[in-house]
Length: 71
Image (cartoon, rainbow, N blue to C red; front, side, top):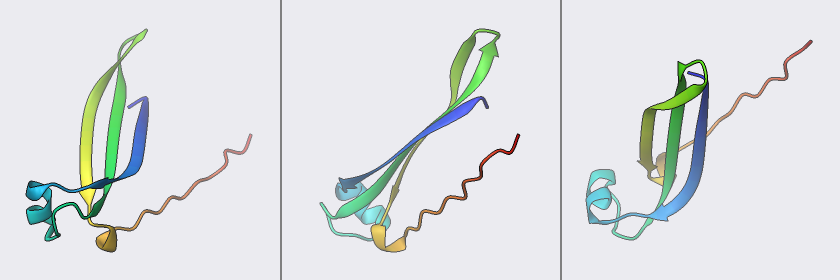
């Protein structure tokens, strides 16, 4: 993988998601969209993984560990 882009946002669920997440229709959800890229050849990147995830906000936790590179 050369890089990953990720977007976290809020959305409302539909009937299918509500049933799968044991929630009411139109209740708020956390939406995560992730695109992972790799080098196809020397000058071209290509999308290799696409994820669209939905989480019930009462059962979701987001945590990051960011470190600064030392030269």
